[in-house]
Image (cartoon, rainbow, N blue to C red; front, side):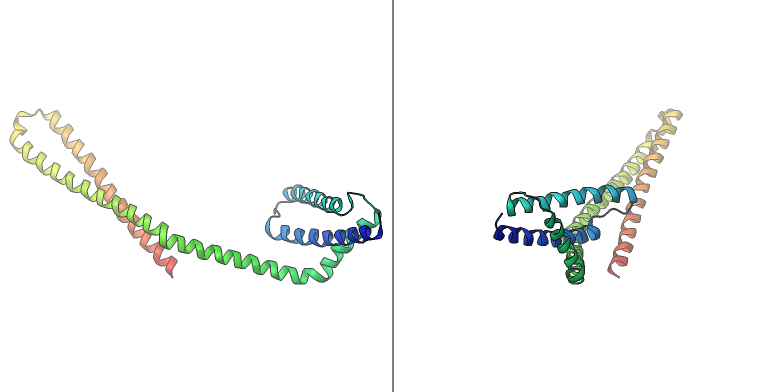
Length: 198
């Protein structure tokens, strides 16, 4: 290798060390697991990936020829990052993470306020109207049944009357439970919306 290629390779390895250390800090903040064995496994995979990246840079610089001083150049890049660049990079990275989180929360609130909440409100309104309509129809059915039963009751066997009365009572309980569930659903949703707004 001539001096130009050696100098370019040295700069590439120093830059690779800086990038490797910066990526490790980024990985620690964003992706590093909390449990010990998961951290060991993922750290190992990350370091292997970093090694492949360094070798790829070396291959681009001098065709993949390994020299001892290139390891020193990588260590020099890592040391330069921790000594000079880390105090600058970490605040920028933390600020970028906070900005990203704030933008995500803002978009999430806008989507909930403009899309999700109106859709949920319409669905609940439709379901409430259907339940109310069902309750109204059921009341009419009960009234019609009582009118008819008043005239034909003497001609209906007692066990049939008891069966019909039990069926009406069960259906009435189901409809009343549906009405109560819808009322509680609207009430709880209004309380949650008030808490979220406050």
